[in-house]
Image 1 (cartoon, rainbow, N blue to C red):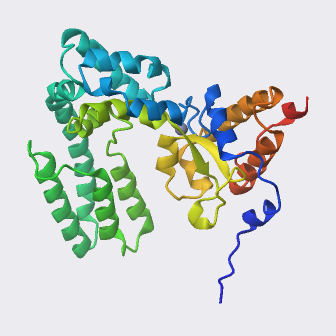
Image 2: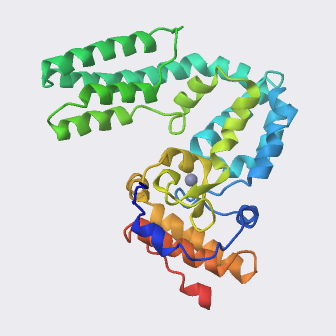
Length: 317
Ligand SMILES: [Zn+2]
């Protein structure tokens, strides 16, 4: 027998027509649209595809800098800082490629990163005093192994924040005190990611090919179709369920519900209003459709439990 679990949010847009084709929606990214979630201006994916084929990105840094310069204003904050570092280094060492330049800076950034990481591991270790014996022992083991990795200048495998948090959650999964569990995970989440600390970006990318490093400076800004209702929750695969979001925000949401995304991005309602204002101005030039704006507004309101309640009165002016 077929399982019956159609969500209420799906039913309401079921009989509507699809307002924009994929191509039409993608076209909108030609007009400096801010990301629904973080509000940063997005890059059209076709421009990124052309960059993928640009051989100058793996050559001398002076060449690669020239290719990337037009994209500096849409880079996310950490990526822009790293790009500025490349700009000044390439004046001194124009013949070195991006990887060679990062390797010159790796040691100093790795030290800075290890300092931040070890202070976080210390904070987590304090919980050994109050955790049940079995969990405390497992936590001790995990921290010892992790310290072995981060204090080794040439570790067998680099430290992975994602794997560490996964292992930590496993250790804590049977804990009876949910508050303590949450506190420990919250501390672990402060471990730097390459998207929020320059030192983590440098360490993570220094092992990569020069063209990959260059593309990683731009990639978070590429515009994508975000499934408002996640695919795994039977979200539709068309513009009735698509919002324009940068690749960084889309990837960081995973398959979580919209409400969780708003919790982690408290400015999302304001940023969504900025995007809708831009879309309304495009409707007036016949570059977007009113039906898309109306459906997007209704879908966001419903899936966010009214946390995103956009003003589209200008649509009818
Ligand atoms: Zn974004």
